[in-house]
Image (cartoon, rainbow, N blue to C red; front, side):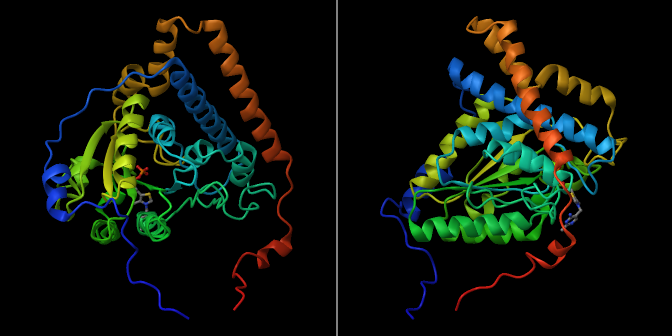
Length: 358
Ligand SMILES: Cc1ncc(C[n+]2csc(CCOP(=O)(O)OP(=O)(O)O)c2C)c(N)n1
Ligand SMILES: [Mg+2]
């Protein structure tokens, strides 16, 4: 058998290191103006963000009713991040994230019924009820999990980018992690290799200001997470993660840079989670006023709704219809998740090891 190459091949569009340092690396980090969305884009992002919001609200209720066990980390408040990034992705781009992953799966087009049934541990779940909230996967939809180990997805996602580079397929790997995970050692080992091999990976840091109960200022010596790639020559940008337009714009530029062969890019999405770290967290480490202010002044869904109404391309009645459609999708998922049977006991012995043909 021929020996495999040590590093992936370099696309012909690759810039020289010298050119890169002049153009990309030392460019002033000026915040670009946020380009407007068309009404179609507003509508598309509104529907998706609302679907995630309502899905998560339902998951929260079902957890409270004892229908969902184990850990359950809700994404409410952060919807603009995954939705904006997805709007900048193309077919074949991969996504990988941590345990706050339900919204990511919905944005990747996974069936809400399969996601909800996995939360309730039922046979109809995406992992046949054996993975739960943090462990779902769909190779078909290019969604690579769902990871409970903080930071683990960063090295795996960098590996996905290695494969893209090796196959020269023009795809980008979007690797999501939190402000807490940004202090994990393997993140920097990954950064180093990604830049060295100019891998097409966008590191999406979802800075929701807290890692469990610890505020970022208490845990991080450098709180500007867009600078975390400086010592590896990876460019970074801070983005208003509550504004889906800003997210899409930044993600599109970052992805274009990756596809042009310039190597990795870091996007720090400044966002906020409204709920506790997980369903079992009463969130006593922050003031209720702080949460209320974010909800009232920065809510990603309300921003788009206000824009749509101002544009007069849609009225309150049409928005109510959208809401009803979204609620119907979520209700259907919740019913399916309760009606689907629990996995058979024999399933305990499956999906443990994989038989590989020699
Ligand atoms: C290696 C490892 N260390 C610790 C934990 C426990 N833990 C779970 S979530 C979390 C905080 C992570 O916060 P952040 O990266 O900001 O993500 P967020 O929950 O805010 O989305 C910790 C410490 C873990 N799961 N894995
Ligand atoms: Mg966090």
